[in-house]
Structure formats: C-alpha cells, structure tokens
Image 1 (tube, rainbow, N blue to C red):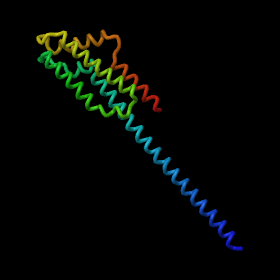
Image 2: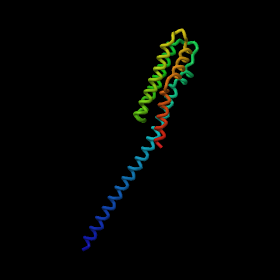
Image 3: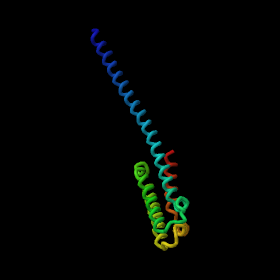
Image 4: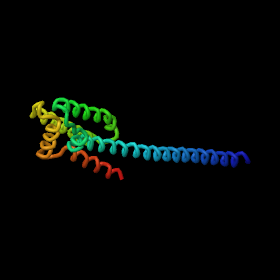
Length: 165
C-alpha cells in the first residue's frame, strides 16, 4: 500500500528534476547566444568602421592630400599610389567576413574605380609633368566621373550599419 504512493512521488520528483535541468540548460544556451550575438555585433561594427576608413583613405581627394610631392616623377608617384591602395586593401581584406556580399562588391568596385582613375591619369601624362600633375589629373578625372564609386560604397555600408539597429 505504501509502495504505490512512494513510486508516484518519486516519479513526480524525477519528472520535475528532469524538467528543471532541461529549463536550466535552455536558459544557459539562450544566455550564451545573447553574449555571442553582442560580441559579433561589436566585431561587425568594427569591420564596418575599418572598411569606411579604407574607402576614405583611397578616395581621390585623400590620396592627393596624403601624397603631394613636388620633386617626384609621374611614374614614381603612380607606383606609390598603386602600392598604397594595394596595401590598404590587403590590410582590410578579411573584413569581408562581417559584411554583406553586396557591400563587399561595392568596395571592390570602388577600389577598381580608383585604380582606373590613377592608371588613366598616369597614362595621360608624361614623366616630365611631375607628381603634382598626376595628382591634379586624378582629381580632375574623379570630378568628371558620373558617379563616385567610393561614396556609393560608403553610403551602402552606412545603410547596412543602420539596419543592424
């Protein structure tokens, strides 16, 4: 007679303990996911910051400001500009993990657009024109361009960041 109520009480205790541990595991998992989500958000925001900085640094006006040399030839400055753009790009290449495919495509387009501006400007000058002639040609070509691919990429990245919140 006493064994049936004892079995029922033990069975209920086992079910309650099992349910408690299952609920506790779910809470722990949710807490870990929330912490990971916050950490990932911080990493993604840093990636967006770095990529916008990259785009700003390769924009034609910034390239001109950072590389104004009086006593340097067109070919030397052309090489320096291409190397600078390549180094900046390689330094930020891994950031593509944290942004959309569309965002990365716009960054690629912007980089190629700037490289094209630099190459076309250098190709239109003679070596005797000097580095400042190249810088002037780059600015002129960028101003004549129908769309500033760097600004398009920056605007897209800013919109993606706004969507995160």
